[in-house]
Amino acid sequence: MKIWDKGIAVDKKIEQFTVGRDRELDLYLAPFDVQASAAQANMLAAAGLLSAAENEQLQQGLQALTQQLEAGTFVIEPEYEDVHSKIEAYLTENFGDAGKKIHTARSRNDQVLTALQLFLKDYARRAAARTLELVEVLLTKAETHQTDLMPGYTHFQAAMPSSFGLWFSAYAEHLLLDLSLFEAAYTVADQNPLGSGAGFGSSFPINRLQTTRELGFGQLAVSSVGAQLLRGKTERTTAFAVAGMAATLAKMAYDLVLYNSQDLAFVELPAAFTTGSSIMPHKKNPDVFELIRGRCQVLQALPNTLLLATAGLPSGYHRDFQLLKEILFEPLTQLLDILDIVLFALPQLRIKPDLLNQSKYDAVFSVENINQLIQAGVPFREAYQQVGRSVEDGSYQPHREFATTHLGSVHNLGLPEIRAKVAQFRAGSKLTPVR
Image (cartoon, rainbow, N blue to C red):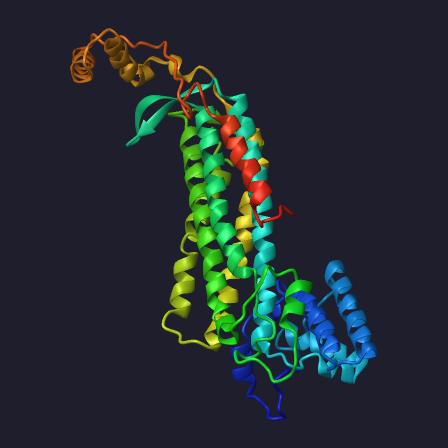
């Protein structure tokens, strides 16, 4: 069944190619298409285009579909090309003419777009909920390990004293920044396109503000032409948010792969979290963080792939947009899976204490030697040169006792200030944390 069927048979090979993976991928959209169809029916009834009895039948049928979806029994059979035709066919089979009327004043263009907008809004909320959970884990680890020092690195060279508290809190703060990208994606998705039809509106007296309220959209995409321009824009905006967060997670995972190596040995994973070698019995490989790193690197290509798929398209709907589901949906799930595995693994991470007591890290205190000379009245440049010469001639003795006081430093992590940022985000964000 095709909702555009005019009685003309379509070549089977053409049909197979044009339908693509819609039956599979539309399962992501099914709950939201049902939700939007319920709002559509209520609006048509209010406009006098459906009777109260017909609307009651449709609401009953749509509720039954919701129950199927919740039970995992909803299926898009091969005779339907997508979820939209399946839903309309179900309503028509069960309620006759009432089902045939559900598409009044609606095009598949605004129907698909509305389901996509709702889906991507919901996705942004779910990603935010997991991310905030991870931020809390990181801040808890930062507090627990705020006195555990480690060498900070630049250019893969041990540089200055740092701490695990500083490291954990850094990633907590940056994940909050990544959520600002999801906030932007949510704002774009929070526009209601329903009622824009094929992109040119309808001559029926529909009430688009009614469906905006019922579907929980923050705003109406007012221009019917502009509403259709959301197709591609919302997906790209979401993809940029995914890529931004993936970049942060990839960097964190790479750090942990290095820190877990025998040469550094800053951290240790439980044996059950590692894999072995088929030939080297001593190996305990941090595959979980290597795969997080690799998958997050791939996710960073997502915006470019979407851009290439839609580059150069004029306004209006084009079948090219169908490909965006194939490009986007599975990576969205992958990011949630990555957040879940990080949430599972990170609390189990063990920190090695007293790392800076090793003589190989003596040089990281060189700046403290400089600072000691400065406090004794030696100008910085002269102090720098003195310490540099002592490192070169072997007379250098590290000044291990140091204390930082400024906000965001080793001995003043600023955890209350970062927690205040979290609280501010929770209080002011549209991304209501739901799982």
